[in-house]
Length: 246
Ligand SMILES: *[C@@H]1O[C@H](CO)[C@@H](O)[C@H](O)[C@H]1NC(C)=O
Ligand SMILES: *[C@@H]1O[C@H](CO)[C@@H](O)[C@H](O)[C@H]1NC(C)=O
Image (cartoon, rainbow, N blue to C red; front, side, top):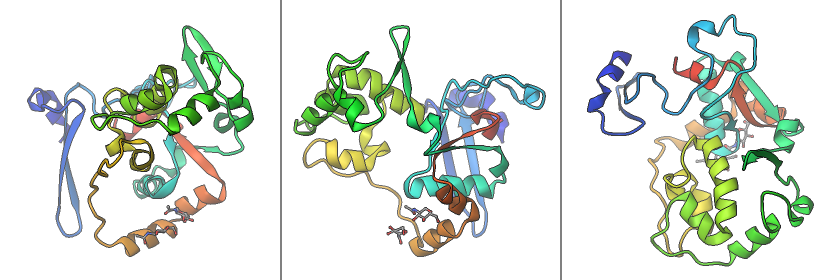
């Protein structure tokens, strides 16, 4: 059905509009894409044809990692295992450097982000005060009821530096999205519950039809179990995320 992306001028949504309808055993997905390539923001610098021979570094321009935490993390791992791509997964374990050290690129320089409470207490470039201080102060602030995007809520609480450097990078990494457009309510419900405006309603999510069965199948999935046993915190695709949609 992917020929549809040629017609995607008809599709008013920016990224992709997927409608699914369920028959008894089979799900049909119908996707339309605005651009010439499928996959929204997923963009790896290696195209399909090169993948088998290309030996150099792989750069992700879009999403570069997937988190394993929680039900959603488990569910994604199960999806990868269901579509038979387990061998393409490049795990990041909690002991790996990639999990311990994070960097952001600000004002043409790479900065290492604090990775412990202790290091967060120190003032460190590119921030003009200690990160722990900004975060702690922000926890007790109030945000106006109209605030909903990640940027609005985080800037309102923690200030522009945290919103511009930290939250924007985080949102790009996790959702491949712009923090000024992504709704905290929709994308990070637990965070929204704690940081969103007072009395803000929670986002409605479709209910799972058979939660016990769903849970059981997740918990018994060997791939999900392996991720837990090996303490993965996140993972990437060895041949790039656009492999999923190419
Ligand atoms: C699924 O399992 C998790 C972890 O054991 C548990 O916290 C959660 O309540 C369960 N959810 C449902 C819907 O059974
Ligand atoms: C995710 O799966 C692991 C392994 O089966 C399980 O121990 C854990 O409770 C699951 N977490 C949730 C939130 O379902």
